[in-house]
Length: 132
Image (cartoon, rainbow, N blue to C red):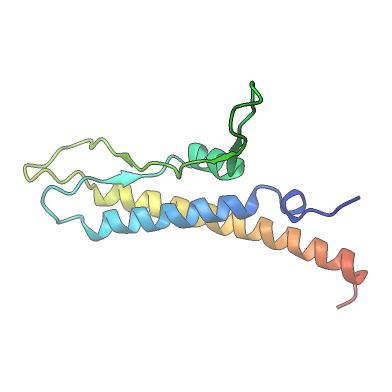
């Protein structure tokens, strides 16, 4: 039976990657809170994780003359946030909301790292027989 790290680690590596990208997007929003016309963006975590887990989309031939191959999945698109109170300069960043989203995402990022660490420690213990 072949061993697969993808199966052993589960969805945690992909979750860490998506959370990391989301932290960058939210930090960019906060950095541009005073930039006129800046539109706040965000990543839909569920959609991004689903795309990250798929990795690639398998194509099937229905005719022997069709090309065979694998189409790569596109990266998740950034979504625009709808502001609760629009500003006169067109900036849609709401610093309090962004700070709360950043804190929430940071906690979830840390949890994903802890789950991943637990999986890696479990694999390490299985390999070494629990000896360190």
